[in-house]
Image (tube, rainbow, N blue to C red; front, side):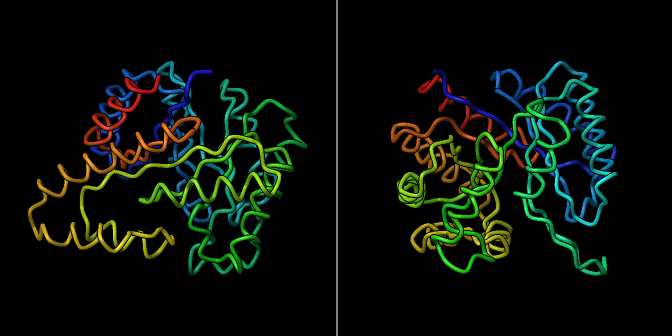
Length: 277
């Protein structure tokens, strides 16, 4: 079976950003990924923008998977969105718990398992459902094993496969996969890979989402100071090698977080896809 590769975008906020994304999408499409995914802001804050990018991508003849969460929306709103995707010929969803943004005033939080069950109830097997996995464990998890239990619940509820949060240690993924197997999980879990382009931004984002940057890697990146080009070149080499190690170790494919940029993710993905078709 061929390995599966995919790319993730976030919905731009400006017209210039949308035009740039079209170019990025076109260039990455030349690598023939299985699909592109489009993120969904906290509480559905980018719902309309996400939907517009998703439908535009589909019209361009590309396979696309919208991210979706309940957030502060009612069931009727989510069902209407699902039906609009179904009518457009979209057959894949990334189902997430999502977050309710501060200030929304809502207290309801529907977990991904509930969304998976909702989608299966109303649309049957129409959608291929992806869910999130956390090799370094979700920031809200009480224990390592409990978090794996939540993943199993989502998959048992009807999800087909999982995509991981990004990480920079292959060992964390392989240990996680062993633990998932022991827990009775047999569905595919695709590692998510993040490019390294700006260490300050990456460190801040990683603190917020619970992704670990190994101490040696942080020291190496900090040592470049403001030399962004050296950070990008080293990051490209490191992330490419990490991806090769994952594929050689048995990963079923890779989900690349593009950050809406062509490079360095295109060079990384091309090297990996050519070596592991």
